[in-house]
Length: 470
Image (cartoon, rainbow, N blue to C red):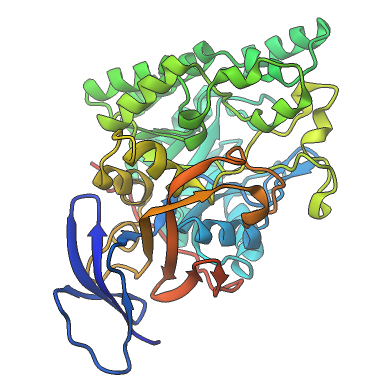
């Protein structure tokens, strides 16, 4: 494999900020130094004026995710290509345990689809829907022999995804003792289902009622319940897509008590608020994600939590469905719920715009330091999910997943310029400061400006270790 020297860039990690040369060789960071002398066979890239960042790690994405009759419109190929153009070089997707198979079968099925398509490195969490002795045995086997050390459970979507409290407790107890992580979608699913039924019976069918039937207090209640189950199990727990202070206040209190609680939020909760739902137009379906967008006051609490480490990760929950039926051959998309908001597939795109949007609204507005920006988008997710230090940092011996980022450039976001299969972006027409210039995956240049140099199948499955964040 060819060697590449990145010369004179400003290296930003979760803890460091310095100008140096970075030598990538044999897929890893080989050396870091000043004014390094290399042979003629080494390609030299001048990174003066650019940030040298570790590749982004997005631990919450949904490619080829089946939701009833719908499937997310990004394949592993299109979704990981979009990730690469956005400066993300590792994703953790989901393998779904169905009614007819097991956790190990779910992992194998997901790998069969992903391995030939992925353009960046990847792993999976397993979504566990039912728990018995055989499932627990397979979970332990997955952790010890398959390199899968995290599992997701739902407190929402009864009859479809929801697990009961006893099942969640059993998983927390075993996975926590073995050093892994249980990630929880925290909403009170049975009460939400009742509110949805009542809204539809009253003739309320427009997308705005998606938000009105999923109030923040039900996210807060479920978060509190999950924390107490983790406390009883003496286990670490991770809450996905935290959107409200109703949830956050329980996380803050638990961490103050010394309970190992971790949580993420997503860019859309920082970029938008519930004012988008002030209409009965179907266009609002773009903003139908779960949990829904919250109030500006909730946003303030999210930013505070990001600054003070009560939230440790910003992931995308990239779960794209098209607005136009049949776009690129995808059907049963958002339009499925045109006359019934409960049938709108929940989710929104965001994998390609995560780094630049957070740089613009976080770093440039003084809400995040550069180190904290890297920590939230790369280093801590790698630590929490057993990828560090192979991923998530720029250090000798780490994978040469490197992003050259231009802080002085600006760009205006349009869906037609992005690489997802989705036909819209929530950021349409918005001008953002910062731009990904080059992306290296294990030392190989895969994005060079607007040029795609990667290929399907070049990404690898990354076996993961245990939680490393505490």
